[in-house]
Length: 119
Image 1 (spheres, one colour):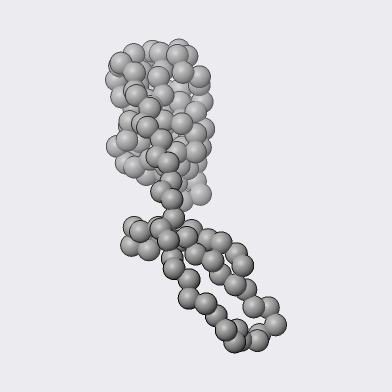
Image 2 (cartoon, helix red, strand yellow):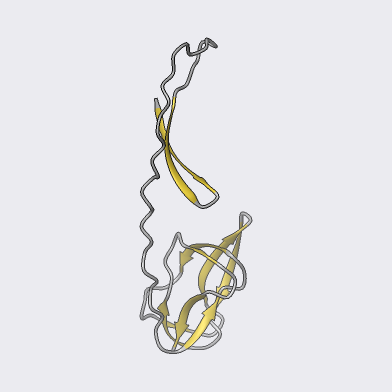
């Protein structure tokens, strides 16, 4: 038996599936009660710092944060790499200042989401 978590119309289910490799049919099968799977933990949003926000130009995956929090950046520096449709898109700093990230690597973001602030 293999166990899977499956989402159907926004509802999570934990299911067990038996794989039959030899092509034979299962003669007796028991009916299992499907219990809802535990909900995934949702991490709290990271608070953005003071300053001008830098927003996501498109939905995508935050692939790389180019600087550490609190680093000084210059206008035009690439501060984040977003991946969308297997393409990397650099997001540049709109001004000089100190960067505070409001997201982390591996996070999926929507268009307009605040990625960081620059003060």
